[in-house]
Image (cartoon, rainbow, N blue to C red):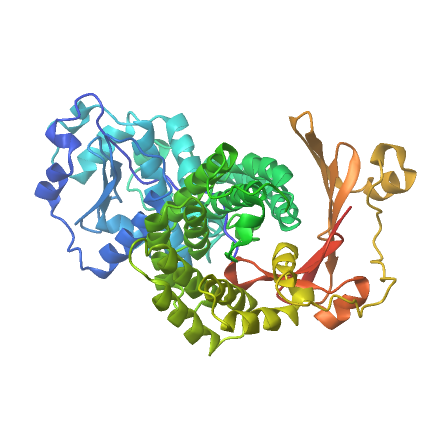
Length: 576
């Protein structure tokens, strides 16, 4: 599903900053005058759900914590949406009717935008003086007085922020820019609902709003490659570079998946600092290869010997901050809860880890990795109480139903800690599939049992027939310059060691990352999805599969390339 950044603000907006305690600046004034719509009304319930999703991502002021109040209104009055200084967002029933007068996807996006617009006003303190409400007799009077003082610049700014809030919350806001059967986008449609020309002229024109948001969306989509190359670098354990790409994208679209991936990277950096002790247990981490903006479409180290180093503490603290923010942005986002549990586990904050993994388990009760991590947390939570038997029972029950390397590895660790003979059987089972294990885990397994690491793959691997070679200094390579002549380019310069250019093919989904002038990574699209058997000849060692968020799987040829399937297509990520 694609969604766009557009904002609809032909609805009326108002507030009172001068005297925040005046009655007109409080929700009670509107509830008394017009009555509140029953909270169990279907539209009111939908509105509250959408409000909670958008509000979770909106900027907030502590003295104006948002709450939604839906009031009754006759349909012959103009739609009303107001931001009040007491933190209330007032929404009339007629505004709901107009927003929902479409298919569910479009209707929800409309309302998310309206609410996002008002939340932006709330955060910015864009309120209008309470004297506007003197001698109010009805909505018509309110509208007329408010419209005379609206600031067009603030309206367009609230449009932009509200659009981004709704987009980050996962709503298809691009629907707002698409014409309906009468060749009206949402802004034209809403403007036509206003009862008089003075009402319609009080805000920027519908075309101005649509054009502004299309331009903003175009600018946002240009930042997508920063996110994608951050993901790709992370997949090759180059989080030290990836963090810069994520931070650049964060300035434009700080959505849940971006926060999760920053937390993921700081966790990976912490693992390097922890060294071998990071792999005492095999803890699952989830990198998210997708971002909601795209759907809108225009280790080695030192051992800590029982205590965390200062660097490890700092990295884990950063990871915790980003992952906590990701889980707050979307409480139903499983990767953030899993990664938060892992960061807390490493930091010995076991009760935080337990709370996070319980949230993840509630959302994904059948996930084996989550259940395994929960058992490890239960074991570590024991302190003076022996919870080892309970943890072992959980893992053995899982092992009787699932053949999962992560599960077998952690079961072996817990059995070994009590000197149980069953650990040997688990290590031997893992040794048989050692070639498919991640390198740090493989090292741990092969130290416990004899591993057969002889390669049965071709000594000479096939080469991908790509138009560009990696490792070339582009400005001095005529062949690269000839190919890239027709590609678009986007320069970046974040630090002396992190600068370069992203090149994109104008039609095909090809992209090249150049760092310090050298071609570093090439994204090569394939017209169809290849099986592992078809991919293997391109790798001189066994392929490794790596789980990502949302049930995606990344197939790795270590140190050479990775393959990610998208429906019926596949991307090959080649790295220097």
